[in-house]
Image 1 (cartoon, rainbow, N blue to C red):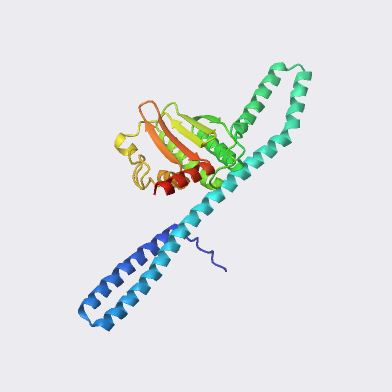
Image 2: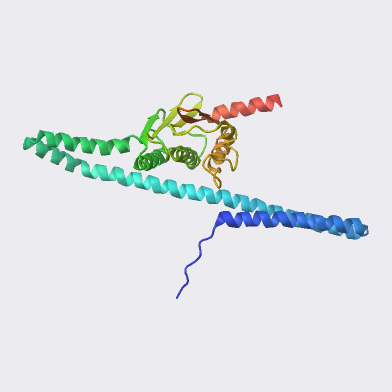
Length: 294
């Protein structure tokens, strides 16, 4: 009987490779320095050459480990995004399939003069369609799918979500999967902050203008302490306990890689994460200014 294959943890293996190769580099250079000090010129040269070769090999392994982690994150995000888009597609197809049936039911109820029943039925169908159409505010299918999935998840947790979206969000200067990862981390962070709040409210705003793309996610959860807010985008910093804090670090580094920025403002009333990503031409202009000033 064939044994089931074990699932490979790419993140764990990558960290093992990084740590082991880093220790290897430190050890080989410590040994090399010891031999160079205590032996003649030729042994010292040979030791130095060996140390350099070992260091280059270990450095390549470390680089590949980081690349593997990045590719693993990308694959996980893409898989999640495809799943969300598939769910959205199934919902839209189901709505299209059911549309004629709904019309027939409403027509029959009106024919039987069951006006209140018809009104209630229309209201129920309208509510179901609104829950999907709320997320269909941009021309970017991946962002629409992510927003629908996050809105549905929040509402299941008793969170009232308000969405305002302006612009197509189609010509992003970054891959859609990276933008989805940004939104996913920020919305999840906001939803986590509302766990112990009575009237849970979350607001998502997306805008696009001539300069670029801006967004904000607000919640009425507890205020983030100033000492945490100042460093909340740093790796390992979190207001939700130990073992957290990488999500917002990923958000900041991703946005900054495309010339953007993100800030947080928190008070007793609400906490807002606001970000901006310039259009590609704006990024090119900023880069030219940097080159000229250099």
